Image 1 (cartoon, rainbow, N blue to C red):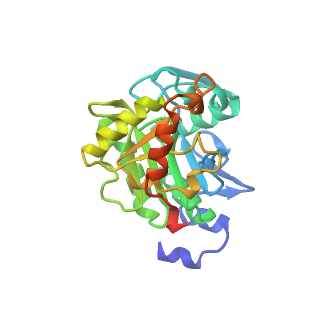
Image 2: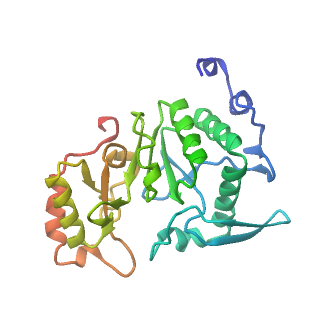
Length: 271
């Protein structure tokens, strides 16, 4: 990739990887011209973070895209109750269409997806990528695709979460990528109410594990672009933040807040 140092302009960078780029879109197999595959994150991730999403859950998704009637399964090995990736923003037609295209291309044109993502990272100088804002690792071929992307983009930080035990160690050989276990052995899922998070944190710390409690969702000033918690720790715990549960009204919130404040700061590049 040292040859890229002499390549100027997005169109030329994409061409280096065999991808046609015209007016902000790339030419994909089957779907024609589409927007680049990595998307802008939300207010919690921050502007420096780009995200990759595919269809969540195990059910079938049907969509009419450019006159083509398509049906494809979700990519997770379970259907979580209250899954955030099946509600709100993720139910809008544009997001479903984007995730449908990403899923279809990942299953049928893996090499194209790999080249398109690497090209976009170099063309846009992307520093941070959250893999699977929705979805999960669904095959060994797909896992290998992401390993090749991570290996090719050593100056970019990648992180993701998985409930697929076969994928948990996929990034162990890379210093610029981390996979957080969403299912904690002997404990359960990695998010919940304040008392649940406190208990999980204490058990993991007692076992000598690398664990961090995320501030996002309870601290409006905390964004992923400023935090390396998910890039450094084997376990990351999330306080539930939803319309049905208000963490700051929980009697155990102050106890949890004390633990959070005592945590070593997980800063990106020391900032």
